[in-house]
Length: 193
Image (cartoon, rainbow, N blue to C red; front, side):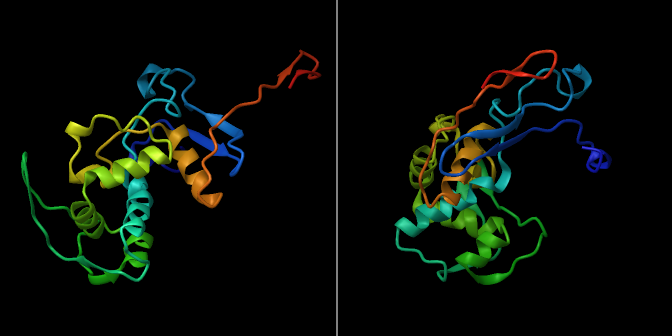
């Protein structure tokens, strides 16, 4: 957090899971000790939050199931979509467009425009179905999602998102997170494990 303080970051959370088993190795829900000026007692590992671009690998996983490959060319060009809320014109983080890029490059570079275009081509249900298969159960307000879902337009729990990525590391096998409590006495002797 000290390294991010100049960007007004005042709190953080971390979840570390063992891929394949789901064992929680580390989970810190907040770094503020309940300080109300910096987020209070919110457990950010369990509170649904917008994940930014972290859903893009799941989108592209759904694309693979629909015939796309890592080499499929995707367009990273200015694009405006008509939505119920009006025109939607996504931009990349670097505010540039990169023309025709292979899917692998779009994912590795986290380009927004190809991701939104892919979601538009596949349909929202394809991403939601993949996300649910990977344990992201908080993505349930289907009527409120639009094309920005792949850019963080929904909310997921960090614990669930880490579990989804753990499944990717384990070759697609989803293991549900679990914790093992360790309790020590005042002398540091292990009482329960």
